[in-house]
Image 1 (spheres, rainbow, N blue to C red):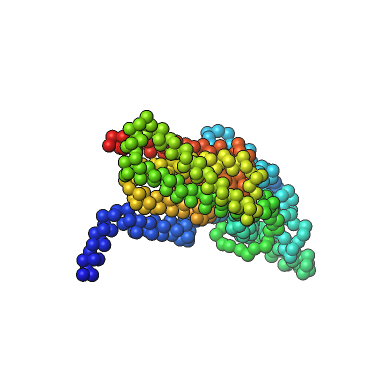
Image 2: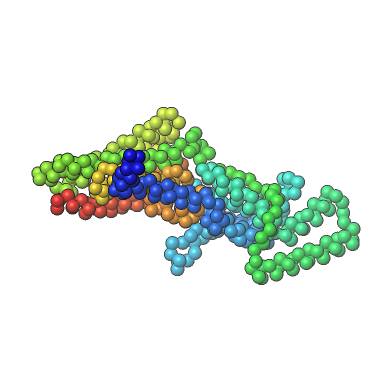
Length: 430
């Protein structure tokens, strides 16, 4: 009797393709996504974007700039990227524009090499006279500043060998005692050989590969974003988790359409003066308002319990909340139009929403993902919604700066609704 029971269960699972897919495809999909994110493959690690400003333009600062540009873990830019490749290159960053770029989220870190750096670039023994390189950072990314600071020290050791040797001789002469004429002659000869080696390396365009110890370059780190936030990461979690559950809510609410089709209510409604377009539009508006209400309740809870600065960002919240709710409502309508039954809708929606949430940043910040995963996240509603809420609550940007996220979310909502309306024709034909 046991074997027939097992055989019957297996047959039922094979017939329920949605449950079968959810049982095997979802675990494999999640394993693949998180393996790519945390797999530790060197060639898939995201390069840290760094804005570099050289105010000194000395030989030492130019060596340091070249050393940082050769670092494979950094994507160094000295001027804003031009959208038109044929256009005249934009002006180089200044200290003010670099700080503004970090505040706008163009890069998590900016390095500013001050004037006078070439005269005293190395700070042996905590030399207070050495100019300090300014490291401006976005405090939401706690990893990037530490990595850039370490790679900066490495670049100083590997890209400035002559400067390091000359400064070492100076400190030795100052703190230990003067060199004898023979010692100074030998040191001068060694320096000449080192300069020749450096010149050969520059002609061959080879980047030094060895790493050095830290602390040789005086660095002053300063956060330019998020320093005045009482609960800096609450807004990020409210947006990321909120968008994921909005997708579930909108999909479940849109599933009422399947219930109506199965019970025959849909046929009776369509036999009246109500058209399929107006019916879907009404459900879309209702689901949009429902999703927005859920999001508002979540942010109000964050304000009441976790001190989220909600009421100082009401215009941005309204714009992003309504656009996000519209996009997720249209997503739910499309899935409901595609699926045949409630069970199928539940399985497919769970699979898609969890995958979108993993890639789009609802489960793990996108800026910590490999570059390929960050680009893949742009194909999800989650990524655009989270980026918009981050601009509002973290970067304190005005509503005008949300045009990109708003445009994408509205366009996605319109396209998905048009597709849902086209697929829903099967109920009219039936």
